[in-house]
Length: 327
Ligand code: TRP
Ligand code: SF4
Image 1 (cartoon, rainbow, N blue to C red):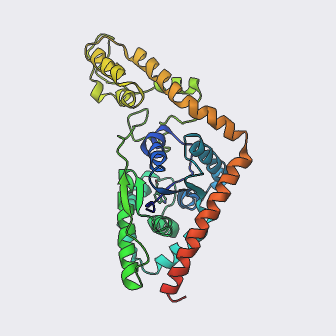
Image 2: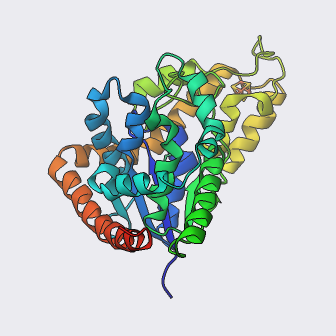
Image 3: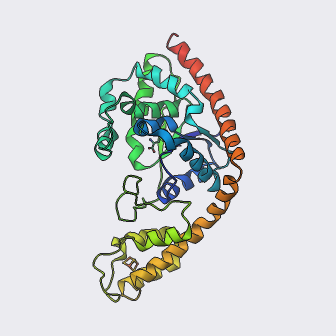
């Protein structure tokens, strides 16, 4: 039986951090076994917010591609590519814009939220309003069945479904309605307990050296009620403990939990342990990163082959769309 298709994307606006790794990428890696996966580095989307200074975008694209390959996204099974190498996404975005009422875009929660969060830039642009429409084009141009994303992206996939229904009703049923495949891993918060985000500079990158990991872990917030070493702690309110649950073996997690509650372990020791665990967990990825960084041509070749494969599918869909829309 043919495998169902998946599409997902990540914006090249910085280095890949632990939040991406555990919340998104390791899930993408697993999905490769059971689905026909298309994963794109969505550089048009990066431009919707970074348009005033796109000078780093090319470097970030390369870094992201290296990270993807290093953590196990496999070009022999998945189609890995750069969005703008398949300009059909932009053409479909334009054609869809003919049928999408502006209020549908204005009411997507991320529209106002991001404008508030990124108040230092002018996001009252045409392109930024169209962000979720471009995302719809990304997904449906491959007739994807599933979209593996986090909770925050659910409204975008909902919008894609509404647009698909409208298109299929107006013209002809070309597109399946894509469904969200929610990532189940609990969200990793940033070093300061807020959402892990580039805006807050509170992340650990996949590529961080052991000293950097150590310094960052030492700066993490813990249970604020613990002042003296033998105060009893509340691990379930401590951000560090949620990291242990992801990176330490189960018996060690139980031990930390009980030692913390009984005041038998100090936060500094607890942090030293986490820093070691993270360093060990990331070191195989970093080893592979170094290999890919020394072979940039190989990375570019992967992306170019991926774009060719993606383009074949995208142009076939566009041929159908154009017939349906009478052009
Ligand atoms: N908006 C997504 C994010 O910020 C990135 C993205 C762009 C995407 N196009 C997509 C995700 C298509 C899934 C499917 O994470
Ligand atoms: Fe958090 Fe560990 Fe300190 Fe407990 S001992 S409060 S789990 S850092």
